[in-house]
Image 1 (cartoon, helix red, strand yellow):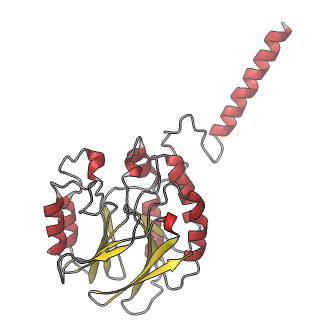
Image 2 (tube, rainbow, N blue to C red):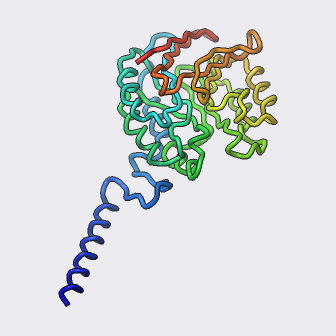
Image 3 (cartoon, rainbow, N blue to C red):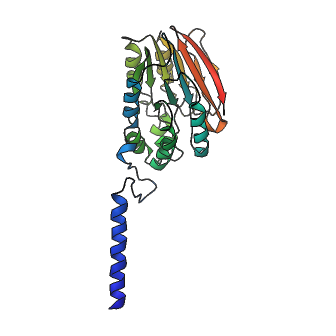
Amino acid sequence: MADFTISRLAVGLLLGALAAATTSCDLLEFSPNDTRAPASERDLTRKNLAALAQQPVPTSGDTLRFVFTSDSQRYYDDVPPLVASINQQRGLAMVLVGGDISDFGLAREMRWVNDEFKKLNVPYLTVVGNHDLTQNGREAYQKIFGPLNYSFTCAGTRFILVNTNGREYEFNGHVPDVPWLQQQLADTVGVRRQVVMAHVPPDDGDFDAAVTPAYTNALEQAPRLVLHLTGHNDKFYVRQPVPGRVTYVSGYSVAQRNYLVLTLWGRHQYKLETISY
Protein backbone atom coordinates (compact mmCIF):
# COMPACT_ATOMS: atom_id res chain seq x y z
CA MET A 1 0.00 0.00 0.00
CA ALA A 2 2.81 2.40 0.84
CA ASP A 3 4.53 1.79 -2.50
CA PHE A 4 1.29 2.37 -4.39
CA THR A 5 0.65 5.67 -2.54
CA ILE A 6 4.15 6.96 -3.30
CA SER A 7 3.84 6.03 -6.98
CA ARG A 8 0.46 7.77 -7.24
CA LEU A 9 1.93 10.86 -5.58
CA ALA A 10 4.88 10.85 -7.98
CA VAL A 11 2.54 10.62 -10.95
CA GLY A 12 0.49 13.49 -9.58
CA LEU A 13 3.56 15.67 -9.15
CA LEU A 14 4.72 14.86 -12.69
CA LEU A 15 1.33 15.72 -14.18
CA GLY A 16 1.29 18.95 -12.21
CA ALA A 17 4.72 19.89 -13.51
CA LEU A 18 3.66 19.14 -17.08
CA ALA A 19 0.55 21.26 -16.70
CA ALA A 20 2.57 24.15 -15.29
CA ALA A 21 5.10 23.90 -18.12
CA THR A 22 2.49 23.88 -20.86
CA THR A 23 0.65 26.87 -19.41
CA SER A 24 3.80 28.95 -18.85
CA CYS A 25 5.00 31.68 -21.21
CA ASP A 26 7.17 29.14 -23.07
CA LEU A 27 6.21 25.82 -24.60
CA LEU A 28 7.21 22.30 -23.61
CA GLU A 29 8.87 20.69 -26.63
CA PHE A 30 8.21 16.98 -27.20
CA SER A 31 10.36 16.76 -30.33
CA PRO A 32 13.16 18.82 -31.90
CA ASN A 33 10.87 19.05 -34.94
CA ASP A 34 8.13 20.74 -32.93
CA THR A 35 7.05 23.80 -34.95
CA ARG A 36 5.05 25.53 -32.23
CA ALA A 37 6.07 28.89 -30.78
CA PRO A 38 4.61 31.29 -28.23
CA ALA A 39 2.32 34.00 -29.60
CA SER A 40 5.04 36.60 -29.06
CA GLU A 41 7.34 34.66 -31.41
CA ARG A 42 4.89 34.06 -34.25
CA ASP A 43 4.08 36.13 -37.34
CA LEU A 44 7.26 38.18 -36.92
CA THR A 45 7.33 39.47 -40.50
CA ARG A 46 3.94 41.14 -40.13
CA LYS A 47 4.90 42.57 -36.75
CA ASN A 48 8.22 43.95 -37.99
CA LEU A 49 6.60 45.45 -41.09
CA ALA A 50 4.08 47.19 -38.84
CA ALA A 51 6.91 48.55 -36.69
CA LEU A 52 8.75 49.72 -39.82
CA ALA A 53 5.67 51.55 -41.06
CA GLN A 54 5.24 53.34 -37.74
CA GLN A 55 8.77 54.71 -37.45
CA PRO A 56 10.00 57.76 -39.38
CA VAL A 57 12.72 57.26 -41.99
CA PRO A 58 15.89 58.38 -40.15
CA THR A 59 17.60 59.85 -43.25
CA SER A 60 16.71 63.02 -45.16
CA GLY A 61 15.42 63.39 -48.70
CA ASP A 62 14.99 60.12 -50.59
CA THR A 63 18.02 58.49 -48.97
CA LEU A 64 17.50 55.07 -47.38
CA ARG A 65 20.09 53.24 -45.27
CA PHE A 66 19.87 49.63 -44.09
CA VAL A 67 21.96 46.58 -43.13
CA PHE A 68 22.21 43.34 -45.07
CA THR A 69 23.45 40.16 -43.33
CA SER A 70 22.85 36.47 -43.92
CA ASP A 71 23.34 32.84 -42.88
CA SER A 72 23.39 32.69 -39.09
CA GLN A 73 23.17 28.88 -39.28
CA ARG A 74 25.57 27.12 -36.87
CA TYR A 75 27.00 30.47 -35.73
CA TYR A 76 24.45 31.51 -33.14
CA ASP A 77 27.13 32.66 -30.67
CA ASP A 78 28.21 35.26 -33.24
CA VAL A 79 24.75 36.82 -33.46
CA PRO A 80 24.93 38.87 -30.19
CA PRO A 81 28.10 40.76 -31.25
CA LEU A 82 26.53 41.30 -34.68
CA VAL A 83 23.48 42.88 -33.08
CA ALA A 84 25.66 45.02 -30.80
CA SER A 85 27.64 46.30 -33.79
CA ILE A 86 24.55 47.06 -35.88
CA ASN A 87 23.06 48.99 -32.98
CA GLN A 88 26.06 51.34 -33.13
CA GLN A 89 25.23 52.34 -36.72
CA ARG A 90 23.37 55.61 -37.27
CA GLY A 91 20.56 56.38 -39.68
CA LEU A 92 19.39 52.81 -40.27
CA ALA A 93 15.81 52.09 -41.25
CA MET A 94 15.97 48.29 -41.00
CA VAL A 95 18.03 45.10 -41.14
CA LEU A 96 17.56 42.57 -43.96
CA VAL A 97 18.49 38.93 -43.33
CA GLY A 98 19.23 36.86 -46.43
CA GLY A 99 18.09 33.42 -45.27
CA ASP A 100 19.50 30.32 -43.60
CA ILE A 101 18.53 31.62 -40.21
CA SER A 102 18.61 28.00 -39.07
CA ASP A 103 20.76 24.99 -39.91
CA PHE A 104 18.25 22.15 -39.55
CA GLY A 105 14.98 24.01 -40.10
CA LEU A 106 14.14 23.82 -36.40
CA ALA A 107 11.74 26.26 -34.79
CA ARG A 108 14.04 26.38 -31.76
CA GLU A 109 16.93 27.63 -33.95
CA MET A 110 14.76 30.35 -35.47
CA ARG A 111 13.58 31.39 -32.02
CA TRP A 112 17.18 31.50 -30.74
CA VAL A 113 18.10 33.94 -33.49
CA ASN A 114 14.99 36.02 -32.89
CA ASP A 115 15.90 36.22 -29.20
CA GLU A 116 18.92 38.27 -30.32
CA PHE A 117 17.55 40.07 -33.38
CA LYS A 118 14.64 41.45 -31.38
CA LYS A 119 17.27 43.48 -29.48
CA LEU A 120 18.03 45.45 -32.65
CA ASN A 121 17.17 49.14 -32.56
CA VAL A 122 15.32 48.78 -35.86
CA PRO A 123 12.95 46.17 -37.34
CA TYR A 124 14.39 43.19 -39.21
CA LEU A 125 12.95 41.31 -42.19
CA THR A 126 13.96 37.88 -43.46
CA VAL A 127 13.84 35.82 -46.63
CA VAL A 128 13.69 32.04 -46.41
CA GLY A 129 16.88 30.00 -47.00
CA ASN A 130 17.35 26.42 -48.13
CA HIS A 131 18.32 25.24 -44.64
CA ASP A 132 15.18 26.89 -43.26
CA LEU A 133 13.13 24.53 -45.44
CA THR A 134 14.62 21.21 -44.29
CA GLN A 135 12.62 18.73 -42.17
CA ASN A 136 9.61 20.67 -40.80
CA GLY A 137 11.34 23.97 -41.51
CA ARG A 138 8.82 25.27 -44.00
CA GLU A 139 6.02 25.02 -41.46
CA ALA A 140 8.23 26.45 -38.69
CA TYR A 141 9.38 29.38 -40.84
CA GLN A 142 5.84 30.26 -41.91
CA LYS A 143 4.58 30.14 -38.34
CA ILE A 144 7.44 32.10 -36.81
CA PHE A 145 8.17 34.55 -39.63
CA GLY A 146 5.47 34.40 -42.27
CA PRO A 147 5.14 34.26 -46.08
CA LEU A 148 7.87 32.77 -48.26
CA ASN A 149 7.28 35.52 -50.86
CA TYR A 150 6.30 39.06 -49.92
CA SER A 151 7.05 42.70 -50.67
CA PHE A 152 6.90 46.06 -48.93
CA THR A 153 7.73 49.69 -49.64
CA CYS A 154 9.88 51.98 -47.49
CA ALA A 155 10.94 55.51 -48.45
CA GLY A 156 9.88 55.01 -52.06
CA THR A 157 11.85 51.75 -52.30
CA ARG A 158 10.00 48.52 -53.09
CA PHE A 159 11.64 45.50 -51.48
CA ILE A 160 10.69 42.18 -53.08
CA LEU A 161 11.64 39.09 -51.08
CA VAL A 162 11.40 35.85 -53.02
CA ASN A 163 11.95 32.16 -52.28
CA THR A 164 14.60 30.88 -54.72
CA ASN A 165 15.41 27.55 -53.04
CA GLY A 166 14.63 25.36 -56.04
CA ARG A 167 16.41 22.23 -54.81
CA GLU A 168 14.14 22.00 -51.77
CA TYR A 169 11.20 21.73 -54.19
CA GLU A 170 12.95 19.08 -56.33
CA PHE A 171 13.42 21.61 -59.15
CA ASN A 172 9.70 21.50 -59.98
CA GLY A 173 9.82 24.57 -62.23
CA HIS A 174 7.73 26.72 -59.87
CA VAL A 175 10.34 28.01 -57.41
CA PRO A 176 11.08 30.84 -57.66
CA ASP A 177 7.59 32.03 -58.58
CA VAL A 178 8.48 34.09 -61.66
CA PRO A 179 4.91 35.29 -62.47
CA TRP A 180 4.62 36.65 -58.91
CA LEU A 181 8.03 38.33 -59.23
CA GLN A 182 7.05 39.90 -62.56
CA GLN A 183 3.85 41.23 -61.02
CA GLN A 184 5.77 42.79 -58.15
CA LEU A 185 8.35 44.38 -60.46
CA ALA A 186 5.57 45.77 -62.68
CA ASP A 187 3.81 47.47 -59.75
CA THR A 188 5.65 50.79 -59.64
CA VAL A 189 2.91 53.02 -58.22
CA GLY A 190 4.60 55.31 -55.70
CA VAL A 191 7.87 53.42 -56.18
CA ARG A 192 11.10 55.21 -57.07
CA ARG A 193 13.39 52.16 -57.06
CA GLN A 194 13.32 48.43 -56.31
CA VAL A 195 15.49 45.89 -54.49
CA VAL A 196 15.06 42.11 -54.81
CA MET A 197 16.33 39.90 -52.00
CA ALA A 198 16.61 36.11 -52.21
CA HIS A 199 18.75 33.41 -50.66
CA VAL A 200 20.09 31.37 -53.59
CA PRO A 201 21.49 33.38 -56.53
CA PRO A 202 20.39 32.37 -60.04
CA ASP A 203 23.84 31.10 -61.06
CA ASP A 204 24.01 28.60 -58.17
CA GLY A 205 23.43 24.84 -58.41
CA ASP A 206 20.64 25.04 -55.82
CA PHE A 207 18.66 27.37 -58.10
CA ASP A 208 16.26 25.65 -60.53
CA ALA A 209 18.11 25.96 -63.86
CA ALA A 210 14.85 25.58 -65.79
CA VAL A 211 13.60 28.82 -64.24
CA THR A 212 16.86 30.79 -64.50
CA PRO A 213 16.29 32.39 -67.93
CA ALA A 214 12.80 33.67 -67.06
CA TYR A 215 13.97 34.86 -63.65
CA THR A 216 17.02 36.79 -64.86
CA ASN A 217 15.07 38.21 -67.81
CA ALA A 218 12.42 39.53 -65.41
CA LEU A 219 15.14 41.27 -63.43
CA GLU A 220 16.84 42.72 -66.52
CA GLN A 221 13.54 44.10 -67.84
CA ALA A 222 12.79 45.98 -64.58
CA PRO A 223 14.03 49.58 -65.13
CA ARG A 224 13.71 50.56 -61.48
CA LEU A 225 15.63 47.61 -60.03
CA VAL A 226 18.77 48.81 -58.25
CA LEU A 227 20.13 45.67 -56.55
CA HIS A 228 19.60 41.91 -56.29
CA LEU A 229 20.77 40.71 -52.85
CA THR A 230 21.54 37.10 -51.91
CA GLY A 231 23.25 35.04 -49.22
CA HIS A 232 24.00 31.30 -49.43
CA ASN A 233 27.58 31.49 -50.76
CA ASP A 234 29.29 32.74 -47.59
CA LYS A 235 31.29 35.20 -49.67
CA PHE A 236 30.94 38.81 -50.67
CA TYR A 237 30.89 39.93 -54.27
CA VAL A 238 29.34 42.57 -56.53
CA ARG A 239 28.67 41.54 -60.14
CA GLN A 240 26.96 43.09 -63.15
CA PRO A 241 26.90 40.33 -65.80
CA VAL A 242 25.14 42.61 -68.30
CA PRO A 243 26.58 46.16 -68.13
CA GLY A 244 24.01 48.73 -67.17
CA ARG A 245 21.45 46.13 -66.10
CA VAL A 246 21.19 44.20 -62.81
CA THR A 247 23.77 44.49 -60.04
CA TYR A 248 24.02 41.23 -58.07
CA VAL A 249 25.35 41.48 -54.52
CA SER A 250 26.26 38.44 -52.41
CA GLY A 251 26.46 39.40 -48.74
CA TYR A 252 28.52 38.20 -45.81
CA SER A 253 27.48 35.35 -43.56
CA VAL A 254 27.44 35.80 -39.80
CA ALA A 255 30.45 33.48 -39.57
CA GLN A 256 32.56 35.99 -41.52
CA ARG A 257 32.09 38.63 -38.80
CA ASN A 258 31.23 41.24 -41.44
CA TYR A 259 27.99 42.78 -42.71
CA LEU A 260 26.98 45.34 -45.31
CA VAL A 261 25.54 48.80 -44.77
CA LEU A 262 23.74 49.89 -47.94
CA THR A 263 22.73 53.44 -48.76
CA LEU A 264 20.31 54.17 -51.63
CA TRP A 265 19.41 57.54 -53.14
CA GLY A 266 18.14 58.89 -56.45
CA ARG A 267 16.95 56.36 -59.02
CA HIS A 268 19.92 53.98 -59.16
CA GLN A 269 22.59 55.38 -56.85
CA TYR A 270 23.88 53.18 -54.07
CA LYS A 271 26.83 52.79 -51.73
CA LEU A 272 28.09 49.62 -50.03
CA GLU A 273 30.10 49.64 -46.81
CA THR A 274 31.64 46.56 -45.20
CA ILE A 275 31.53 46.66 -41.40
CA SER A 276 33.71 44.28 -39.39
CA TYR A 277 32.89 43.40 -35.80
